[in-house]
Image 1 (cartoon, one colour):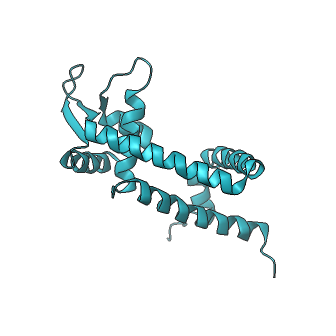
Image 2 (cartoon, helix red, strand yellow):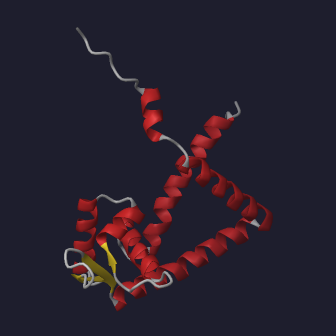
Length: 165
């Protein structure tokens, strides 16, 4: 029996999630994905035009969607691994400025090189037409997912209960 389009998409998304977890594990020098994400955010923010080489935990929170306690834990771990340094922000003494250490920069650069090789290999295996189609579909999927109202979806699945008298 042939899979319905819904089941095929559901299966493909599950498989994509597995691949998404598997690739970073090979790239990240044993870092959990959240830690790698924070390193990447720090690098991105520090490379913005007019940006400084230091960013705040609030900026990381805003861009990464990671809870403030989660960011604090991740920053502690990254600092213990000597991948970042923290200091009081000179512009706002209440804020902590975070920057990559040379070791943290090296980890990010190496991971980007490896990731580029992974993408190149996938592209070669897929061929030009399938690679372009996959890129278009993933961009479209991103746009659809970013517009979803998750609160509304939760209400549809489990509507609020009427209070009992």
